[in-house]
Length: 178
View 1 (spheres, rainbow, N blue to C red):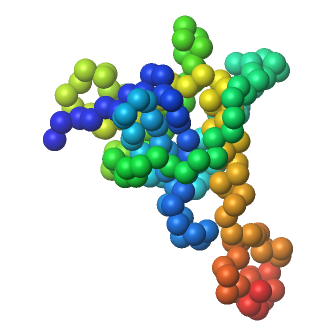
View 2: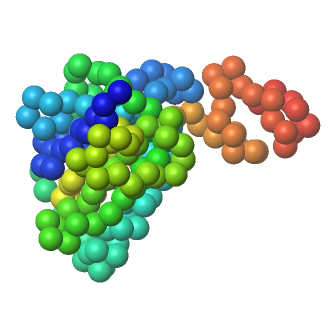
């Protein structure tokens, strides 16, 4: 099967999003440039890690001088058509100093947890989604990701595990239903 590359050098939009109710949500990364819309599915922990690493990268790049986020907050739903080209396994994050952009790359989970280097022109190698965003878009991504993560199920006050609507058996209370 031929390798698929989904490259967004100047995306109009790059956002995390979810479908479903807390506890049963599917998380997505979605990029849009012109008429092209591509989404990849991933785990909540991957969205959390990506937002944290983006914040770390921006702190180094901006050297204590955060870039002002220009424009309105993106609170809109994921764009249609909503689909996933693959489920994310490995991700890579870097800074392109020449273009002054953050570069985010995602590869499918069937490749494994380790990122696989392959030239864009290579016929063989894992599928790839690459997005290049300016710092203000990265800040907006972080803000939106933090909101999605916080909108999940509330934590148990005793053990910190997510509470189901029906409660849960808490190990800190000898298995009592909370």
